[in-house]
Amino acid sequence: MNCSHVPAIGAAWDQGKTETSYWAPIFRGFEFSKKWIADLKPDVVILVYNDHASAFSVELIPTLALGCAAEFKPADEGWGPRPVPVVKGHPELAAHIAQSVILDEFDLTIVNKMDVDHGLTVPLSLMFGQPKEWPCRILPLPVNVVQYPPPTGHRCYEFGKAIKKAVESYHEDLRIVIFGTGGMSHQLQGKRAGLINAKFDKAFLDNLVKNPRKVAKIPFLEYVREAGSEAIELVMWLISRGALENEVREVYRFYHVPCSNTALGHLILENKRKTKRKKR
Ligand SMILES: [Fe+2]
Image (cartoon, rainbow, N blue to C red; front, side, top):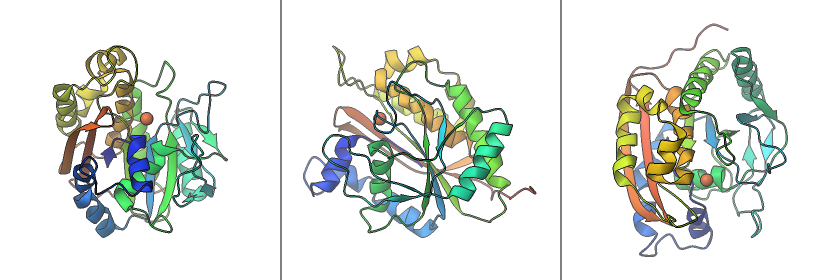
């Protein structure tokens, strides 16, 4: 599941504005998705997002990291923590994934304590609403897309494949959904603030489904030039795509402009064939 993680969506939820004329079309765009994930009943969500100077800062910027703790509290981003449940992790699965991808030569940072910000909690609200407890375990997977240089699209795609391999070799049969969040068109500052390039976004969505290797070759400057400086967050969608089979079925797509001053994109993909667990 891929979607934007615009912080204003979380504020709209928390302030009871989901039925207003501005927000209602956006939340309606996730009605199918909420039912889809409720029917699927995942045991674990691996949630690829970026931290926005909440858990990390300019003092410490891991490129690829994984939350391996038992729980993660909602971060205070300046207005107090969002009124959402504490995230329960899955330390055993996280340790397995960390071992598998590091031995596959991805130099992952292991995070045993951190708070999680809107990058992680907004997609959860969109998919699960506001329950007392999140209905599954969640593995936070923060990626640096804040300070240059972020990981390349190709690196993200290959990292997704390493995660797939790790998940398939886990001893327990779990139902796992991976979220890739962020994007789409957005530039938050300067003369081009509010830039939207729907043509770029839609081509990105089409190619992510059918030709992810082509998407993986998009250089940083193309994201920035075509879809704005914060559109670089889209490299995170390549991690979730890499974790799927090459052949996927597009289950659902939603695209809405504007959401805050961004283009909101949302895509659900499923493997065409059932993934088999491999022997450890
Ligand atoms: Fe973001």
